Amino acid sequence: MALKAASRAAWFLCLWLVLAGADPADIPAAAAAIAAATWTSLRLLEPSTARRSVRAIGQLVLLFLYHSVVAGTDVARRALDPRLPLRPGFVAYPTRLSSGIRRNVFTTLTSLLPGTVPTGEENGQLVYHCLDVEQPVVAELAAEEAALVRALYND
Image 1 (cartoon, rainbow, N blue to C red):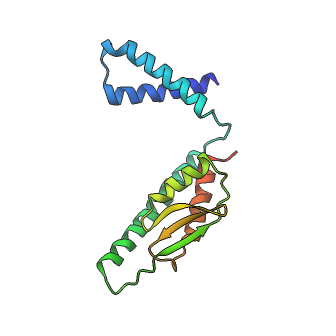
Image 2 (spheres, rainbow, N blue to C red):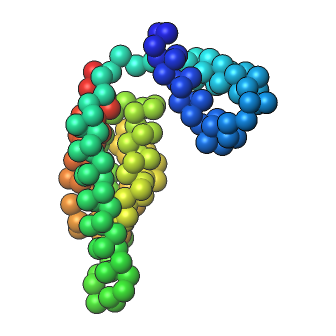
């Protein structure tokens, strides 16, 4: 627990330095802010026992970048070429992630991908608005979810 607290305090120190700079006159305020932020973060988001995989995180980043470029190109192509059909609609995605932080991280990640936007939940499934419902949206979401689980939640 002490190592987790020290790690979070170090991140908050970095954040302080980025936002406020390194002025010696600010040391008392910085120490109080870092202590309060660390204590609050440990109470609101308890340290996880999950082991993070640097390799899997790298693969997740590459997969996300790949999907972003491919989907962004597709969205731009559809927007600029009126002959290409848009078949907007909603698809339901049956996620295996439990409600809460894990599901929120997944929906945040997938909301950044062009062409799909999470719009809510229905019957325990995530609902996405898509520009083209005939695209393999569910398969792409499954790949993103699997990569996220490998990267961050390998309990």
